[in-house]
Length: 451
Image 1 (spheres, rainbow, N blue to C red):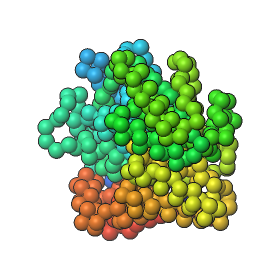
Image 2: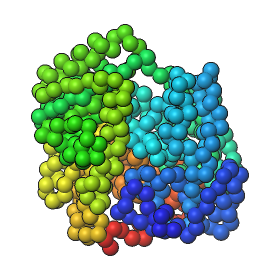
Image 3: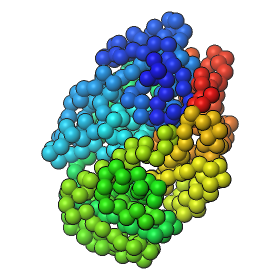
Image 4: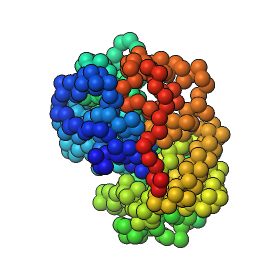
């Protein structure tokens, strides 16, 4: 059971009472009905790569691990959709489509491990969110088990289903409304060409100013990612790509689309980076070099394991023009609490992922990490941003919901949850600060790191 006591958010932990591995929607429905019969919580989980405690079993209960529901049921190129079970790993669909001229656009950094069901639960994004959008922009419909154990279909392969957008309601609901058992996803035609650039900067400010300059010029890159000096060291030790270790920040910039026009966009981006103080702008010389650059970016979180025994990844969002200020505040907050912070994030859409390095066995460090995380997220709110761009609220950020939303807004969300999940047994104690029905009180997980 210890394997399932937490996800990628390691600070809070609690064991489920039982773990089950269904293979069909009917089995999931039977499990939910058993939960109702014995009045115990039921919590869906995918690969466990989520970073906010979204699949943490706060109140114990039945954990429904969906990783054995892993079939790609259908790929329909003519109508541009695929049907997958929730346990399909994100990159499996990309590989299944390789050579067909299409791909599945949402590509979280954990693409090689995370499941599409988990992506749906948290409305995940990824490096190519800037141009292609987050998961909700690519889900056409789903089959789901409701809280009473019934199986329903919402949306489907056709575009723009009439009526309320219940598919949109389900995406990002973190398992609090239903358990997805089949998902219709939109597939996207491959671009004709790519230009992938690496901008090297002497300061974080110069790099963040270049981001605003590129977007301000009307260019919408497919991806615009930033890595600071701390993360460069970890990546270079892991992959020996040749990153300059004395640079304070690099930008990984990719434009894609029709070949005609890509060179002009590339040249304009290089000029804008140089005007913003770039020391050098390199272009990936071939597909292999492009793939290696992306491998570095997507393995960045894994490489952090070289820097500290534990880390906590935050997920704030701010308007792009606030990035220089926000990066400075993150470093200040880290110094204030004596916590080293490294940064790798989706700079193009203002989605920050400061990584706080610590040792979870040290209670004092855990307390400082929690305090620093709180101050970082408070600053995101003060900048007009949010406390999540793609990781969800989970248990980690539930107390921030009342800072982001008025009581009336939270009440509306709670009513919606009660309409789908009246007894509150599906994924209780997640997302909303109010606990749900039946007089339940808000709970915290059983234990915290170093406690």
